[in-house]
Length: 143
Image 1 (cartoon, helix red, strand yellow):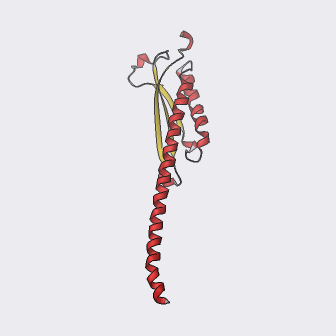
Image 2 (cartoon, rainbow, N blue to C red):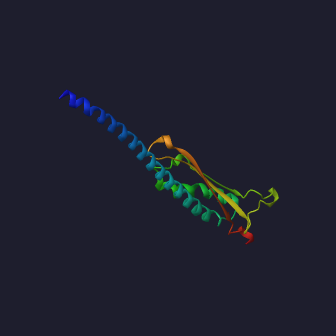
């Protein structure tokens, strides 16, 4: 009976090692799917936030609105996006000279949202930044 046990012990060790590696591989695949989904949610969020910002009357009003809008759109993703790390900004598109920094219909702005995204574990935690360039639709009092 002891001979049979020794014979089967090698197979048991082999199966244990293979199950361990398959489980780790499975966790890595699921983490990549979760991270991909969170990045897609952030892409949708930046478009929605950008739509809300381009109808503001001034850059100051847009800067006040952008953080609240980003937190609102990302609030349902609390399992994969760390809410305390959400940073949203709006500024004129790079390339404009400082004298051209006027909130006017037809000019372009850049909306940026940054947040920490993580999967099953904190090992896969990484900051994700999403940017979107949109045209101002409301020029304030002059439009």
